[in-house]
Length: 100
Image (cartoon, rainbow, N blue to C red; front, side, top):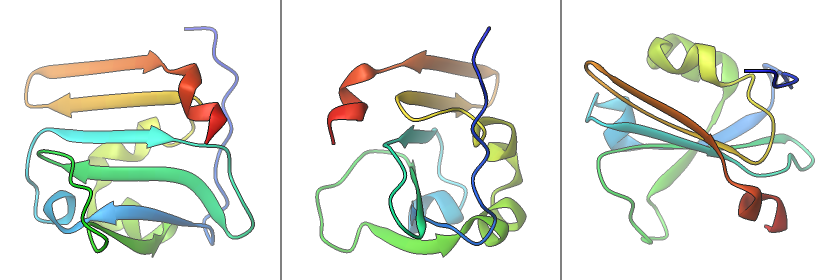
């Protein structure tokens, strides 16, 4: 793809929904620019929600154990998204994520 990877610090936190942890498909991810202690990643299963408690903070190391199918996407740099489901994969750039 010609994308320069930007691996996250395993101690950095990301936002993950309970539905993603429960295996609800599809799995979606987007990455904003990292901030202190965070990687910029948000991962959710199923449909997006604006609920205040939709995302829970977890360390990358834990997410890799709990949702291993996202591991190959978490080196994508800020400004990228993914959507995966059984038999389906999409990865695309979304520059609007850089304006977060």
